[in-house]
Image 1 (cartoon, rainbow, N blue to C red):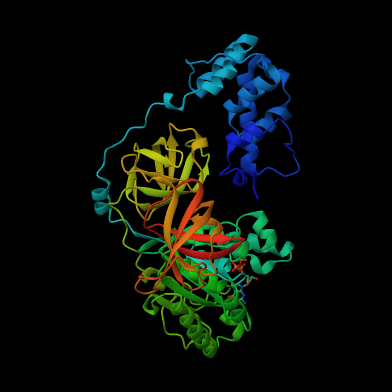
Image 2: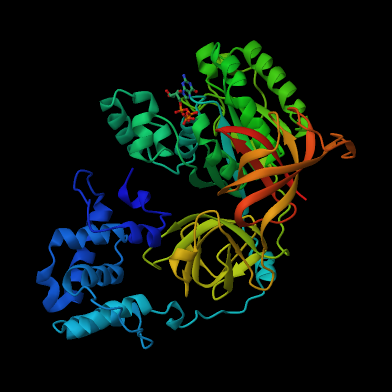
Amino acid sequence: MSRHQAYRNYDYENDLEEYDGGNYSDEEELSPEDEAQMKAATAEVSTALGNEAHKVSTAQIQQSLWHTYYDVDKTVAYLLNKFIAPPTTKPPKNKEAASNKKLASSTKKKGGSDEKTDQAADGVKALKINDTPLPKSKNLDVLSEFEKSKSKKSASFVVVGHVDAGKSTLMGRLLLDLNFVDQRTIERYRKEAESMGKSSFALAWVLDQRTEERSRGITIDIATNKFETATTSFTILDAPGHRDFIPNMIAGASQADFAILVVDAATGAFESGLKGQTREHALLIRSMGVSRVLVAVNKLDTVGWSQERFDEIEQQVSGFLSATGFQLTNVSFVPVSGLLGDNLVNRSQDPAASWFTGETLVKELENSEPMVRALDKPLRMTISEVFRSTQSPLTISGRIDAGSLQAGDALLIQPSGEKAYIKSLELDSEPVDWAVAGQNVVIHLSNIDPIHVRVGDIVCDPKSPIGCIDTFTVKVLAFDILMPGQVDVHRGRLHASGQIMEMPALLDKVKGTVVKKNPKIVKPASVARIRIKMGSKVPLEAGQRVVLRSNGETIAAGLLE
Ligand SMILES: Nc1nc2c(ncn2[C@@H]2O[C@H](COP(=O)(O)OP(=O)(O)OP(=O)(O)O)[C@@H](O)[C@H]2O)c(=O)[nH]1
């Protein structure tokens, strides 16, 4: 895994407290990007330390930079405090603290006097985020801008299925055939894969970018990739098939308009997939509100494009999808070979596949209308990534679940309850003035300390904030036996531990009426109303979907009442 990625989403305040100057090692190689950043930041720190620079070694500077994710000011403060002029008494509060940049240059000018460096270190601590001027808003009427823009439809889909069903290969091939990745890159991956003895994984590597994933040959986090067709701009959420990574899958499904369920048609593989994650994934995506599924019956090349095999799989998968609560009118089946690209963008040229006269996978995707967007509802966006970018030390990304936003807007981050402002924003790597529900947006924030912003937090409008609660009632479908006790609660990227306190009612599955009050246990496949108490307050509100897990198993999913 590249260092850069490893440090996305990290809680640096905590880390900095824990950090005591050691353990930066050169064992792992820095990515070229990290190397350049490290070099530039080391030079900046040396400049900022001025005459004091000789009192610390390059290794000490780099260890601290590493730990603060190249935060020059924090590093200067740390080095001053730790090695150059450790405070003997509690330093006085410096109310006149200037901005980070000013501090760095003033340290440079003044460097030399212990008293002054002490003040400078103190200044780092006292820096006020709110001293930064607020970004300007164009005060646009975003909804009418959106209507005028006639922008392409946008849709996100999650790719689920059993381990090794071929999800990443299929998506890699789709991107290749749609010219969103070039043949040269694939060739490079193929060579690298061959050198690792895993040549069949080359296409999957388009999605599984991280070295750790490559060497294990599995998808670990949600990989997002984009592609466009003439009508629609798509975001792929490639969810890991491995059962240890189900929380990531839940996060992916909670952002998805629809799902591609990849099943492996190879002899025996489909059957073991059905017993394995295929069923659990189908239940989960349904529980997360996904109602449209495209079933890619994959690896048909391995069974000679047998129509009989396809029909058999279609029949069985239809059976269990409808038992899981999907309406079959919302389910389509496409026979494909992800590896060879048959019936993805182009029809299969294999004469053995000529029996199939339906649409290709891409056409089916285009025909899948995204859900109606909650454009005029209060803003809600779950943060899926927090990172440092060239535009801002604090950049977040995620899909807007409801409402809209524009540059200059004030935002409220829950659960911290801290305000931030939108300095600028991007859609598909292009700067834009606004964004609406359904779009995956990158937001450069200002006027907030990064410690208040974490993956899984909710961004909302300060005027209509989401509340933070620690007790709630949820109507769940049980996948396993439920009884009072410890559970992990997942909503999008948020996971927190809680406890089933009470189970007030067993409900009729169809009518929702109370069948039994206070059942001692709830059996699998039953619907029940349960009360959950969380360990701390979390941003949750009625209508949201949550998944309950225990000991690494998904035990229930449902809707907050
Ligand atoms: N013959 C054939 N092999 C395929 C096809 N699709 C994928 N494979 C192979 O199946 C293996 C697994 O493919 P992946 O794409 O990594 O599977 P995955 O579902 O993404 O796996 P996880 O990331 O572990 O969940 C690789 O060796 C692929 O080359 C196909 O259509 N035909």
